[in-house]
Length: 405
Image (cartoon, rainbow, N blue to C red; front, side):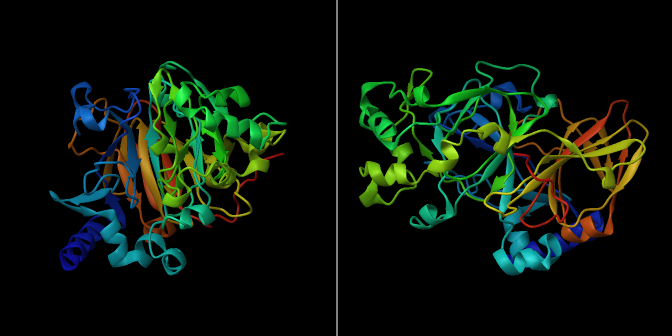
């Protein structure tokens, strides 16, 4: 198997000059309602079966398993394809990590330690958090910082609730939160009374550290994040739907499933009750003048660090009709085209209007470390702007902007 992957990878890398065509990776969530803006054909939103729930996520350049109950064997994992044959990106990285993601990242992590996705729902999801690295390690997992960007191209409508509750009101006590958990089986446990909602704005984003409560709203969201799928739901009822206790303690040691102090202790309390939460977590796009030029603009859309660590970052490249540029980055990235058509090196780029489940598209590419360093020519061959989002792994940039505040 490894030999087959290596052979296919070498052929694909040679033909694509370091670029890999990726196929769409769809992920359902049983407790959510699809927002229907991620281009999946209407009849295919329940392709995994109604019992699995609707498909509301598309994962990009992922080597991370989706932590769903009754999951398929490869759920959440991206595939690269060449001349009709395909293999998992995870296996490709295992075979040629240094050339794909860079020697330094391979030596430190021995995997592509990040992923991104479109997260698309009709309404809000439960107020929840992702465990930090220390707590996640107790169940053999990794922590999960994450980030948001709301691409205008995927948000023609707001859907039901384009607001996100984040953190807790300053002054909230652990006793206040404990009462919400004690009232879990009584319907709405009232946790949103302890939080505040922020209206979501297209073309902006947020940085969410692990241990911070958040209830994402109904804009379609691009989410660069650490390669983990841990979470704990702290809200017992959302839009009239019950949230089972099992989703609160999914990534909690079994002996702690009823230990309310331990469960609350997973939160980063200071970050949750931060008085100036927006100032420390809100992201407006920043033009990277060093990588922009006539006819093309490269913008930082996800930046900043979590506790001083650069876990991930993301940029949005816009190339005007008839223009082209050479894209050079210091590290590998996963690319998704959100508007227009053109080419990246020898690979065609085309934004689909509708995708059938299992169908191959021309909108997603993995840009290897070698290709990123050598430079990749991108050309707009259409009549509208060519726009692509790309995300990077840890410690890639030495000019990453900071968040003011």
